[in-house]
Length: 201
Image 1 (cartoon, rainbow, N blue to C red):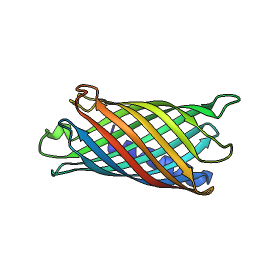
Image 2 (cartoon, helix red, strand yellow):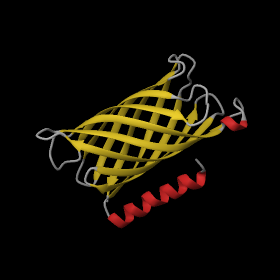
Image 3 (tube, rainbow, N blue to C red):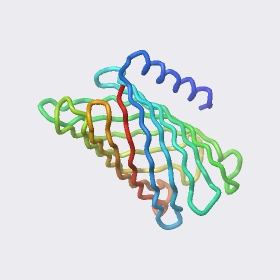
Image 4 (cartoon, helix red, strand yellow):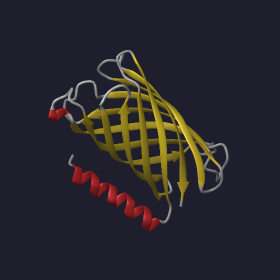
């Protein structure tokens, strides 16, 4: 996957968001607490999303990650779609986010070919919405993320707990916890805490 393809997909999401008039934008701070040989890191994520249909959303996300006590940084850009299904007679939704993206690493510890690569991810989960017509919600999901090419230790499994508290119809506080571990070496893992703000338009 090329940068041009991702950029075009991102522009499509942005265009649909502006055309539909029902979109959201947010920013999050993340702290990666590494375990074993995985270093700690600070990260910042920005995202733009749009409701395409009642049960289908699309989004574009960008994350900048700065590893502590090193000169290593990472940038991620990905585009995703999320179909969902409300369980009849309940306050629970089932969903599955599908995404593709590109990772850029700024480090001398890997070869030039390993410094940029494309990946895909799938994230099924369940969402609980306590009040109908209200944006406050909690979700629990599992995510597998894997590189399209051979990238040692990049393929990961993650369990994600996330929540949103709606201050009003347009403004929300978001946060969550994520445990992410390498699918190749489970000793390489991080506990990720996040907090942020989301605006709906």
